[in-house]
Every structure is written in C-alpha cells, then in structure tokens.
Image 1 (spheres, rainbow, N blue to C red):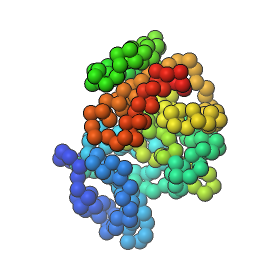
Image 2 (image 1 turned 120 degrees about the vertical axis):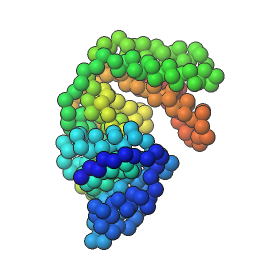
Image 3 (image 1 turned 45 degrees about the vertical axis):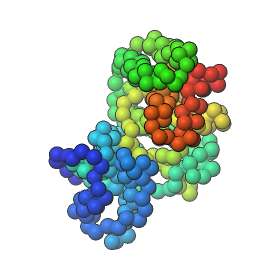
Image 4 (image 1 turned 90 degrees about the vertical axis):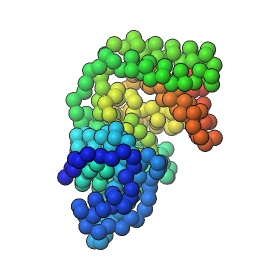
Length: 294
C-alpha cells in the first residue's frame, strides 16, 4: 500500500516513522541502525513481535525518496527475490518499508574480490537494465557538460585551469556521441550494495540513486575501486553482463567520471569533509587527467 499525502520539509523523526510502521505491521522494535548519512536519510532494521525482520528507510529529500519508490515499484520486480520487496510507503514521511534480503554486503568480506561474485553481479545488473524499455536520448552529453561546468565554476580557485581544460577534452569526446540509450540503472553499484549469502548468491540493495542513465554508469564505482586493482574482476562482470565495452561506452564512462570527480571535489572543498574524502576526491580527478585513467 502506498500512502500519498502532503509532505512536510526536512527529515521525519524516528517516532513519526515508527508510528506509521505500527499501522502496517503492528508493534515493532528497532534492532539496528544502519544509517550511513543520518542527516539526509535513515535506515533502520526492525523486528515485529513475531520475530520477522525488515527495514524502514526514510529520506530528507524528495528526489531520493521518489527514485527509491520508482525503482521498487517499476524496476526491481524483475529481479524477483534478488532485491528487496516494497511492503509499504508514505510520501508525507518520505518513507519506504522494505523486506530484508539474505546475505551480507560483499564489501565486508573477500567476496568483494571474488570473480564469481562479480560475474553474478554483472548478470543481475543486466536484468535490472532490461526491466523497462530503453529510452534514446540526444541530451546526455550536453547534460554532462552542464553539470561539469557548474562544478568547475565552483572550483576555479582550487583546480589549475590547465587541468580543467584537460578534463573538458573528456567531455568533448562524449559530445560526439549524438544518441545514447538510457536504461534503468542502479547508479551506486558496488560490493557494498551486493548481498552475498553462504552459497555465493548475489542480491542487490539500495535503490535511492536509481534512474535512467547509460548502462556503463553502473561500471563507474567498480572501475574506480576494484577493476583497476584486479582486471580479472572487470572481465568477470562484463562476462556476466554479456557485453563488452565499446569505444562509445568508454567515452561515456569517462564523461561520467569527469562529472563525478568535479562534483565530489566541489563538495569536499566547500564543506567540512574528512581528510579521507578529500584524498579520494583528488584521486578521482588525478585519474581523470592522468595516464592511469581506466
């Protein structure tokens, strides 16, 4: 059941959300708080009095909530038991109540470096990408360029202009691709969102960033954090996905990298980010303009 009422600004309180959950499941207890960014959203594991467990997730910002609900109602049903099921949602609270999937995050074990896990994740992502018809767009490269320039403007006093010019070459190459096929992507695809059970079966979680994009966007985090260290994982994932990267795919991936690198740098330099976040942001940009790019 999906409840639609007028929403209030800001992040709803835990008490409000649990009261709403009570109306669906009866009395529940909070078992664990897994909120990665408590200021922008909450994720808590709850248990009913009968011992069943599930998750309740609520957002501060409407776009995050809408992306999650759209994915859970439109795209993830194609994944069957390999993704959470939507039990209930409430637009006023920007809350989703979802089933728990088996396994633990691959990033917490050696599974993150297992080629078979990457192979199975590739097949799962392919199913997600085929869960709705593709959309042909002639705007993707222009949108990348606009987002890049917005971030570059905020970094004029931080990044050398010559390096920004090098990065613009990456965007310019993507501009030569006039039509791009967009599919329902995860957009945060990495072992932290792959749940692996004791038998090595892979399931996918966390759809708050999901939206239509080129398929190659779901390779970005893997390329940056895993495949450059162990190229066999890339071979395994693409084998599971049953596709090779074309020249256009690589150009689009580099353009996406350029945007994410600049946006991340702008975010950490204009906020009280940790040293590790700043190092990661700089590494992303250095790889963009350096010889080690992918």
